[in-house]
Every structure is written in C-alpha cells, then in structure tokens.
Amino acid sequence: MIMTRAITVLFATIAVLCARPAIAQVDNDLQRQVDALKEQVRRKDIDLQVLTAKVSELEAKLADCERSREPAPAPPPAPVPETVPPEPDLPKPTPGDPFMPPAEPVPFTPPDAEEPRPAGNTADFASPEAMLDAVRIRLREDFGSRAGSTDPMERAAYQRELKTWTAEIAHSTRREVAWPVRLIEAVSVRNGRLLVQAVVLDEANRERGHCTIELVGAASKAWRGASIGGRRASLRGLATLELTIDLELQEARPFRNDRFIGPCLEGRVIVTQAVLST
Image: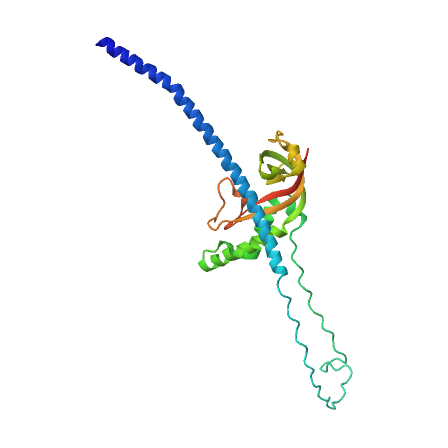
C-alpha cells in the first residue's frame, strides 16, 4: 500500500515537472502575440495621424473653393443726379475771415485700408515649438476669454467656430524649412512611404520640439533599413501644422503636453516633401 502511494506521488511529480516547460512556452507565445498586436496598433495610429493630416488639407482646399465660388458683390446703384438750386446773391466774404468757408473745397482723404494679416514671420517657423507657440497666441487673440469660458453659450459658439478657424490656420501656416534634427525612429507605411519621428535642435543643441517627417520615393528608399535612432541629420521640407479638435479636451494630456494648443485643440508638425541628409 505504501509502495503504491509512493509510485503515485512520483508520477504526479514527474507530470508537474514536465508541464512547467510547456506552460513557459505558452507564456512566451502569448507575449510575442501581445507584442505583435501592440506594434500593429502603433502603426495603425500613425496611419490614422497621416490620414487626419490629409483630411485637414482637403478641408482647407474645400474652404478655398467655397470662398472662390461666392458671388461677386452687386455693383452700387447709379447715383441720382441732384438738381442744384441757383446760388443766392450773398455778400462776398472778407479775406481772412475765420468764420467763412474756404474758397476751394478741401479734398477728402479716405482712411488707409486695413492691411491683410500676415500668416506668420520667419521666427514662427524656427522650430516646431515656435510654430505651436504662434498658434497658441493666435488662438488667444482671435477667441479671447471664449476659449476657456464656462458659459454654455460661449463654449458652444467657440466649438462651432473652431473647425473653420483650424482649417484656415493649417492652410496659412505652411513654409519651407531647414532644421537640424536628431532622429528617433522610423516606421514604414503604405505606398512605400517612411514616417520618421525626430526632434528639432537649435544652435546650442537644445531640443525645440518634435516633428513627423514623411519620406517618399528615393528619399524613402535611401533611409529604409538604415539605423535611425540617435542619428543627426539636416532636414529640408514643407512644414505643416496638423490641428486636431477634441471637444472633450480641456487640458493637456499626460505625455503629450507639448501638443496642447487650447481647449478642445491639439497640434503637431508634419514635414512633407522632405529630404534628409547627413
């Protein structure tokens, strides 16, 4: 009887010892699947960000087309000729009399027309950080206290106007730039494009904001498969602001506080038509 129990315990111990490597293998397989799913989610997020930028650009073009199709203002009506009554015989004014009208009418000088508002100066495009700061200032100038108002009517009006405002800002804040950058990582996306995450540096090698670099064609092939992380490069391309509206957003998100523009609004900088050289 004792021998039978000992044999049973022995077989149970052997079964447990044999099962441990199998469990460990299952855990490893599950971890690899989780890592693969995380990578797919990260790439989908980048694709979504790129598509959002394209949508913003198309909305800006649509707004331009709608403005160009607005009917021209109707010409003013022709003035009706007035019948001038005969001038009465009045005594001629004494020269130098300060209470009499001047001998000749003084021509009317119209006020200067208001100059169009510039899209931004060169300093606004010195870095992604400067571009986002310029938009933050513009938001305060255009909306004032309505941007952070707790009044339901003012908040609703702010949110309605924000979509048109962001389209105009994104359309006007585009400029060719030349920035020194430090590369972080690269991800391949559809149509042979390569999206490179980078941080812009100033002359003292201080970080001045992050940007996403879109490489296509030969520029993409030149960097595909290359070691990216930590490399220094010179960037040339067209810097564009991508503005995203989130009506639930009232303050900066954790780990993304550099993107916060104001209530309901985030932004980031994308460089298209880009060329990277070392």
